[in-house]
Amino acid sequence: MQKGYAVTGVLVVAAVATVVLCTGFGPAGTPFFGMNGSDTASLILFDVRLPRVIAAMLVGAGLAAAGVVMQGLFRNSMADPYLLGTSSGGALGAALAIVCLGGALHGLFAFIGCLGASFLVYGIAQNKGRVQVEQLLLTGIAVSMFFAAVLSAVMYSSGQNLHQILFWLLGGFWNISWSDVELGLVIVPAALALLFFSRELNIFSMGEEDAIHLGVNTEKLKLVLLGISSLVTGIAVAIAGCIGFVGLITPHVVRLVVGPDHRVLLPAAMLAGGILLALSDTVARTIGNEMPVGIVTAFLGAPFFIWLLKRRYAA
Image (cartoon, rainbow, N blue to C red; front, side, top):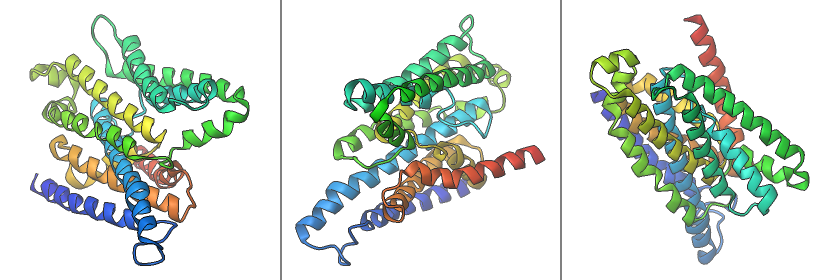
C-alpha cells in the first residue's frame, strides 16, 4: 500500500506537469517562442489548448477507471470499457445523428447509444434476477457485433456523410470547448463513486462464490458498477468518440506497478490514463498534424495487446 500511495503521489505531480507541458506545445508555437501577439496567445492557450488538454485528461481518466472496473468484474486483464457493446452503441448513435440530423446532437446520441447498449446487454443476460459474468460477456460480444453490422449498413448508405462518420469513429479532440470540459467533469464524481466499492471489488476479484460467502451482494454490486462504468464511458464517447486501448492497457500497466488492490489501483490508473491520453493528443496535434488521437493510442496499444496475448498463452 505504501508503494501504491507513493506512485499515486508521483502521478499527481506528473498530471500537473502534463497539463502545463501539453498546453504549452502546439502547431502555433509555444509561449515566448514563436507565438505572436498577447491576445492571440491568450486565445490559443486558454480557449483552445487548455480545454482540450483538460478534456483529454478527464476522458483518459474515465476510460481507465471503467477499464479497471471491467477487468475486476470479469477477472480478465483483457477486458475494456467497450466490452458490453458501449462503443458500438455509441458509434451507431453518432452515425444516425450525422446521417439524419446533419451531425447535430451527435454527442447526445452517442451517449444514449452507449447507455442503451449497456442496459440492453444487462437485460438480455439477466436470468431469474441473476446475471452470470460469463453470460454477460458473451451477450456483450453478440450485441456489439449486431450493432457493428447495423453501423456498417448505415455507413454503406451514408453517401457523403461517410467521411464525417469515419473521422468520428477514430476519436479526437478537435472541437473541444469549455462546455465539453463541464460535461467531462461529471466523470470525476462518478469515478470517485467507483472508489467507494473498491473493497467489494477486491473481494469479487477472488471469485463470485467467495464474495457471496463473505457477505457481498454480488448482483447489486454488478449492477451498480456496470451502471456507473457505462455512464463514464458514455460521457467519454460523447466528448471524444471511440478511443481504443486507453481503458485496456492503462489498468494493466498500473497494476504491474501498484498491485491489484483497487483502493490504490483505481485512482492511480485514472491519473495514468489522463496523462497517457493528454500526451497522445499532443503528439497527434503537433507531430501528427491533427491526426485522430485514436490512431496514436492504437499505435501504442496494439503492440502491447499482442505482447499481453503472447504472455498469457505462454503462462
